[in-house]
Amino acid sequence: MESTVRPNPALYDDSRSVLLFADRPSRRLEMRTVIESLGGRVVEVAPIAGSLARLDARISLDAVIVDADETSADFEALAARLDHAAAAGSYRSVIVIPPDLIDHAAAFAPHPGVALLCAPSEFERTAAVAEAIAEPRIRLHDVNSDNATPRLRQLSEEIGRIARVLATMSGEEHAGVVVPPRPDPVPASRRGETIVDAIQVRAMIRARRLRELFFASDLFADPAWDMLLDLMAARLERRQVAVSSLCIAAAVPPTTALRWIKLLTEQGILIRIADPTDGRRVFIELSDAAAEGMMSYLAAAQRLATITP
Image (tube, rainbow, N blue to C red):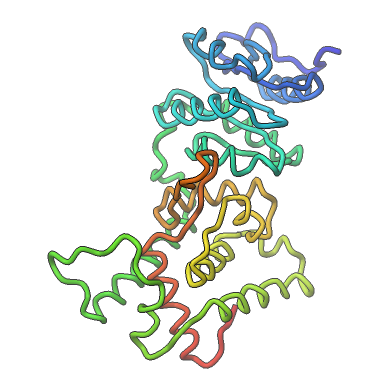
């Protein structure tokens, strides 16, 4: 069955060329329909196996769309290639995955120019494809441009400001002092004789979840703060958090969580740590500056006698 929605052939010279990789015929048809309905031109549809050779055969390309059902050496190599292309500013990509591939996809394609969609809704899928085929290549690498999320930039600046103030007050900000890469997570809170532990942070997270008993959950769709709280608790517990686990902790659709993880990482709030025992997985942690800011906030909140979510 052929797609019933096709762009005007007369517009092909101006349309965006798209390469589509998917193993299931039904998914190929669905994705092709979406691409063409948005004015994209599908130059080839192929399975994921052998995808690198097909990419190499293309002189020019505007976007690559991948719909994967399972991991494989071909999928991992393709994801890594798409990440490299995004970093080089060559083209954008969209990778659609099931929940059990979150860690694999996140490990091989961390660049924000590769959109990771986990069991996406029709709207999420269409929006991601539209962004991929519409974004000018020259602006692909400009993550810190005026188009960056204002709230995210503000959050990054505020955490950095708190950390700097805290360091100044404690007398630790001296010229020539080298900050250790993995500091003890507790000292920041002890400077004010206030100790914050993981149990208290987890209580804050549970309290935030209570909101959904009384208000519509979509009122609280921004997962950034939930992610920071979960990672702060994990830091206090000296526990590592995989990408898939952080997506669950975010309490939002996984596609939304994956997008925020990439944005927060680009802003330096989160950092990626490779799993030394499994090259197909990465852990997510707070950066040292973000952790200092969180400890300062939590200690200040506790000194007010009530920790407010």
